[in-house]
Length: 465
Image (cartoon, rainbow, N blue to C red; front, top):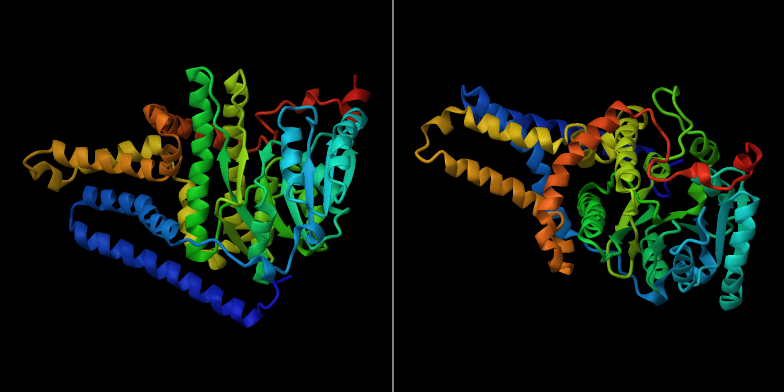
C-alpha cells in the first residue's frame, strides 16, 4: 500500500531519477579521483578511501545545520493527544526504578489511552498494582494492562496493537522519560499526509558515581548522540533514516493495521528465512516496513520532542552495556542487509542513505580504515617528496580526530566536565570495530543480549521449573 497522495507514475519517475543520480555521482567521483591521482596507485587508493569515508561526513554536517523541525501552531493541529493517541508500553520490570517515572512522564502528556503489556500472571498482578495509583491520578486516560505468556517485546507489542482504536500509536520503552509537551510536538509532522512515522531525538541521563561508571555512562550517551546527528542529517537530504528508535516513536495506526504487518512483525526471519523468528530488531523492522509501504519519515529534533533514557551501566558492564552494543551491531548487519538486498526500496527512495548509511556500514571499521589511510598516504609519491613528512601525517590525524568530535560536540557542550574523558571515547570507537567484527561472525545469534530474560517469571518459565 502506497502512502496517500503518491501516484505510481510519480513513484516510478522518482525511483529512476534517484538511481541515475546515485550512479552518475559515483562515476564522476571515481573518474575525477583517477585523473587527479595520475599514475600513483597509492594516491588513487588514498583519495578513494578518503572520499568514500568523508564525503558523507561533509554532506551530513551540511544536512545537520540545514535541518528544521516541524512547527505547527496548536490551533491548527489536526491530531490531539487526548483523543488521537494511544501509547503502547511493554515492560518486564514494573517494580523497576525507571518504570513509574516513565509512566508518570507519559501520563503528563494526557494521551487517550495507555496500554501496558507485561509477561506472565505474576508480573500481570504486579503491574496492575503499580498502575492503580496512576488510574486515580489521571482519570481521563484509559489504562489497559495485559500480559503475554513469554517475555518477548514483539509479542507484547503485537498483542497491544489489536487494542488500539486511535489514529496515532506511540511506542514507549519502560526506561524512557518524556517532557510534558512531547506528544504535542511529535504530532505536528503528521499534518503532512505523506508522513507515516515520526522519530524523536534522544539523550542519556547523565549519572555520577565512580569514574568507571561515569565512563560507561558517557559512552552510552555518545552512542545515542551519534545517532541523533546521523538521523537529523540524512532526514534532511533524502528523507531517510537508518532506524527510528523504538524507545519512543509515533506511527499512523493504519500502517499497523495493514494486512501483512502483524504476521510479518511477529514472525520475521533472516538469512533467506533460515534463522529466526527475531525477538530483537523490532524498530528496524517497523522502519523498513514504513519505507517499503511508501510513507515518509520525519525526524522531530527539538527540545520538546527530546526523550531522556538510561543505558546499561550496571555491573558487570560486559554483560550489560557491551551486551547492548553487540546486539545493536548484530542488528545493523541483519537490518542493513535486508534493506539493501531483500526490501531494496532504499536504493531508489533514499539514494543518499544507500551510500551514507547502508553501504558504508559494512566497511565502517575505524580500527582498520584509519591506519589504512595513514599507510596509503605514506606510500604515495607525493609524500616521499614533501620537505616535512610529519606535517601531512599530523594534518590527517587532526582531521580524523576532528570528525570524531563534530558528531558528539553537542554532548560535550552540555557536559563540559566530561571533556577530560574524551580519550576514552576515542579508544572505545576503535574497540567497537572488534565488537562489530564479532557481531558479523555471530549475526545469526538473535537473542536479546544485554538482558537476561530467562529470569523473568513468565508462565512459560514457571511451568518449566
